[in-house]
Amino acid sequence: MMAEIIRDTDFKRVSESVKPDAKKRVVLPKAQVQEGITYHIYCNSIGQIVLDPQVTIPASEVWLFNNPDALASVQRGLSDATQGRVSKVDLDAL
Image (tube, rainbow, N blue to C red):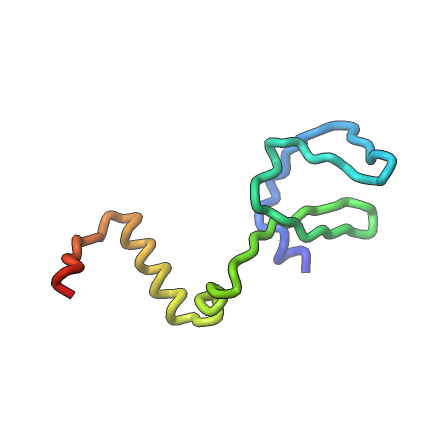
């Protein structure tokens, strides 16, 4: 299961000798925490901890991720836009 979670093995130390506070909380460096991110927490048998960042999507948008054809179409459109393959559309003509 961890092979699916660890997608990049290039780890860098971001803090040293961090100790949990009285409530057993560990404070993460501000540079590592992004707005709107939550974490799944994994721990192995020797006590190493991995935080896997997660984002949530509105329930009204989950249909897109459950529809492979629609998702592929959006991804193609984003790829086209990234590569400059776009055209102007006259909305009044539609």
